[in-house]
Each structure stands twice: as structure tokens, then as C-alpha cells.
Image 1 (cartoon, rainbow, N blue to C red):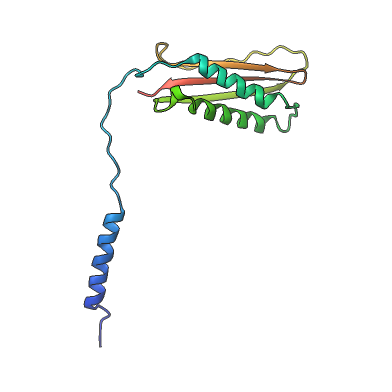
Image 2: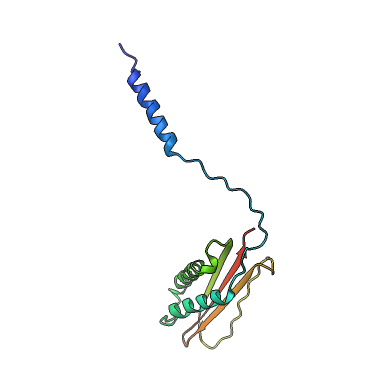
Length: 148
């Protein structure tokens, strides 16, 4: 009568354990950089141009519909964020990007959009772009906040 344990089973389990140890990589531990400011400054003109062209491209053929305005503003916000991250000045930078997009029906009313944020005025910045047509208006803001 055997108890189910064999020398071949033990050797196979040791071999399998060695394979797993090789396959599992230890997470890379990064040393703190202690950078309190960015190595290179932002080129806000490029960021503003990128945001404005994205907004104009997406909103030029848009016709206002209250049912789809929320989804369109989310897509616009995500697209603007992706465009900013693809800029050469943003590659490898430690900036966190927060974008907001507001779309509303244009019926001749006035609108005021505000936002508040605590940040360092020396290294953090923002860009706001607007687009207005007969049926709608759109305001997109991108906040670039340096991660220390």
C-alpha cells in the first residue's frame, strides 16, 4: 500500500518551484529622487495649441444634444489628456494632468465656469480653451500639476 508520495513527485515539484522562482520577478525598488521642481519647464504654447486644435476638431461637427453631451464631454476630456501626454515636452515628465470639459446649449445666455486648486504657482499651470458655435459652447481646462 502506497501513501501517494514518490521520489519522482518530489523531484518534479522541486523542478517546478525553481521554474516559478525564475519566472517571478521582484518589483523594482526606485530610490527617491528628491526633485522638488521639474528638470525642464513646460512649453505652455504647445500645450495650448494642442488642446485648442483637439477641441476645434472634435466640436466643429458637433450638434448639441442634451442626451449625448455628457458622454461627448468625457470623450473630449480623455482625448485632450491623451494629446497633452503625447507632446514631446511631456514625455518623461512628472506632471499629473487633470482635464475638465463642459458642453452646454448656446441659447444666448451667459455662463461662468470656475475651479479651485491648491498648487505651487512656480511649477504648476493650467490651460483653458473655448469653442463656441450657434448651437453649443464648450470649455476645456487642463491642469498640469507637478508630482514631487
